[in-house]
Length: 286
Image 1 (tube, rainbow, N blue to C red):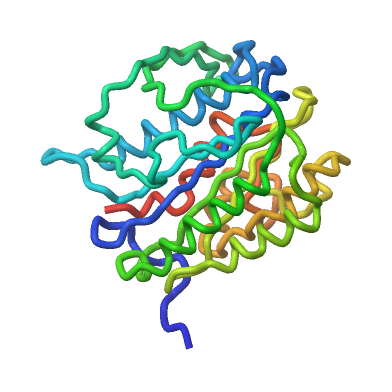
Image 2 (cartoon, rainbow, N blue to C red; image 1 turned 135 degrees about the vertical axis):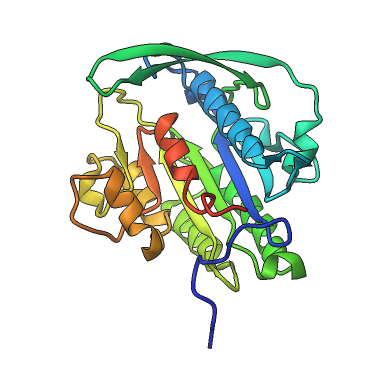
């Protein structure tokens, strides 16, 4: 019998957690879109969002005495070039290792909604950990297989066995070109079955629709909340059900629902909503 309360483990240096970002860098990511009030390609929006999230994770590990490695982080891009490690050839890298790297910077412009309903454009300076890319096919299945191998290996190490479960975030705008829907559901189930003593790996999917006018949906409770889009419904079925301990947090941000369970998914959500997704599991770090 498992005596550990699921997803209750504090994230510490002794018991860190892991994040794996899977980034769709296929040819369709060259399509132009508008995110945070700025016209850009999907590839540009995705790289800026990822860079901001990586900077945030590193900053959460900053202490007066240095950087505490609460997280192990991997970023994989998948495209016509195959599945590639974008931060480190060995896969996972720690915040303290990233903090001492010298990388180019970029100015990120975002549209922010003020309490009075008006908007304002803000700029921030972020590190360019990931460059925009849009080329070729979409080997999503291969990327998910790689993520499964990485997280399964990590979950079975002594250090991570007693840690908060890993989180995999897959951000895509198109359908996989290397697998059927049944194969994608199968690999997603295998990912969700990997576990530490504190619960199963969380698989989150963010779907960037070609229809930028579609309403953004975060943490849907049923597939009916999504448009009649076969790809979006498939990603919904692939995604983990959020642990019940996060229900109140999600309800606070989603005031249009009475309760869960919620799926770890975003539709047409990238910048701000992706950051909201990242808060799941990381707010307890010491």
